[in-house]
Amino acid sequence: MPQLERIGSWTRVPNGSRMRISVVGTTAENLVTAHPFVLRSDGFEQTLPDSMVQPGPSNILLEAPHMYSILVDLNFATGATAEIHAAVVTPAGDVFPQDGAPPGEFHSVITGTEGQIVGVTFIISTEPT
Amino acid sequence: MNSKISGLIVLLGLGLAGPVMADPTCDEVNESLLACFQRISGESGPQVANVRAEDAAADPVLATNAVAAAKTATDEELADAKPSADTGGGSTAVTLTDLTPIFDALGLLSSDDSTSDQLVLNLNFLLPVQDVENKNTQLQLVVNTQPVPLDQLVQAFDESIRDARKDALQKDISTFGDQELKFNWSLVSTRFGRDFRTLRGLLSPVYEGAREKSLATAKSNDAKKGMRAFMQTLQDNNVPLADAQGKKINTFAEPLRSQLVAATIEAATARATITQEFAKEMAGADLNRLTDLVDQQPQLLFSISHNFRDEIVGPEETSATVTWEMTRRNLGNFMRGEGADCAKSDDVRKGADVYASCVTALKKYLSQDLADQWRFKLEGSYKRVDAVAYSFPTDGVALDLPKTERIEVSIGAGREFSGKPDLGRLDFELSYDSNINNDTTNKDRLTAAITLTKRVGDLDIPFSIVYANRNEFLGEVDHEIGMHVGIKFRQTGK
Image (cartoon, rainbow over all chains, first blue to last red; front, side):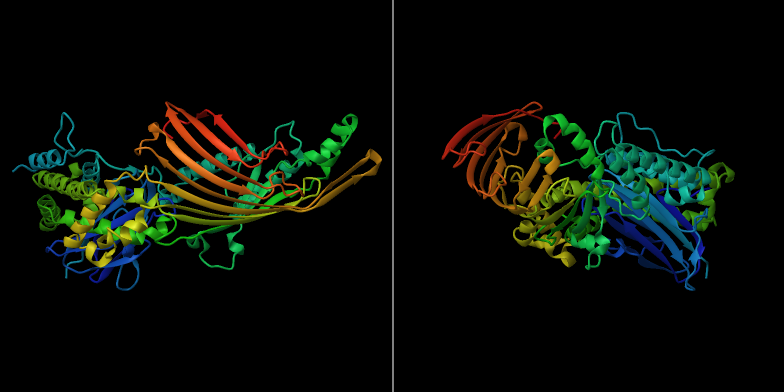
């Protein structure tokens, strides 16, 4: 099945891998801000500032045996088009392919109208330790 | 509680429901669990570009379509650039049109600015400053694709030979016979300019405060539980995410299938809740109007240009302009004054007391209508036209055009009434022109104008009273006061 536009998943990524997220969308005339929220299966939570992912990339450590949901809300302060890119990189530095690959990395182009907030979701399971 | 029912309740609470709200369900035959999640979580939401970059590159059909679309667009541009049959500059334009694909391939063509009679080439790469885009600097070459001989020269020929001479002169104009090199710069900082690339750093911490606050609401906390429950259900049942992403739902056996569908619907509804809580906080705190303040930012613009021309087209010209526009209430003014808490990025992004204080200040600041505040403008420009001489002794034509210089300065102020354009606006302008006729006699002129513009439907009706110490066309007039009434048509919604 091809990649979905607003949800990406990775199955059994190696412990210590990193989720690399970047967003491009703000131009001289258009403003988009990105607001990632990391939710881990054990209850750990973390928000990341826009400045870390735009232009990014921001690296989020993925530790076994947890599952992660990373909820990125794109705030279109003006009408704009944003590109969101996400990849899992193993401790060895290789790209770990997303489910349904190819493509191995998640990339989506999202158009939003002024005042619209669009949610993009990444779900990752780690390799059992 | 049944997960479908709980999902419905959450959606109703968010105001997403229409008059009739059906339970969200998954299409078990055609959808995977994650496809169902995506659809339900974004059902009221976004437009996603139909073709992703990778898909277009990987899929030969999509790639072919993309190339075809690009080719069509380019062909249309080229068609626009082609001259009509009766245009004097035909041969030049065709030559330039032939070069268009090369300029485009080199990334030089500015298709946004190019029109049917001009090509605009971006020359920023020639600037010594790195990262010129972020410094709001632009160097462009504007090439006139349909240059024509100088009208004064054409008119100097006797009428009996004028058309023939005009055609002959036209053929002597080179491909780049009329081009303008333009350099534009605008000051971009937190105080000047409206460039979101610079102002994002000022605005995003405030949005992050809203995000943080929205994540702490009771609804968001319930939603987080829904997301965790989904992950837990997959883990407990050893369902790989790859299956949730790639397998159709009906390939899972019962009773696991029902359990997975229920957890998916609950999680998708929860995901929507988190986004909607953020949107609700943004709207409730008026943060969507922060960009209105950006539109009020002062601007300082500088431009300089030089026209390189074949003599037949006209004399070369050099000009420089400085423009300063400002309003009293704008983003920079807010962030440095009443909204100083909003500028405390480390504190405001926590979504706590400083954020609350920032929101209070913003609401108060925005309670005064921004549209009806006074706008001021100061502009100064200098223009020099080089001397040029034409001599066609056999036709009895000798035309000498002297070098001229001109300085113009204007000060203006204007405001709309009550922030409603339909009630009209008032403008004042005082301007000085050192050389009104662009000649060597340097007749200067001072004008003052007051204009009241009433808006009636799609018409703007300006009523002006103008004072001038000299009439632009009647040299003997010492002082003049004129009254003008006009009608301007507006595009709907402007």
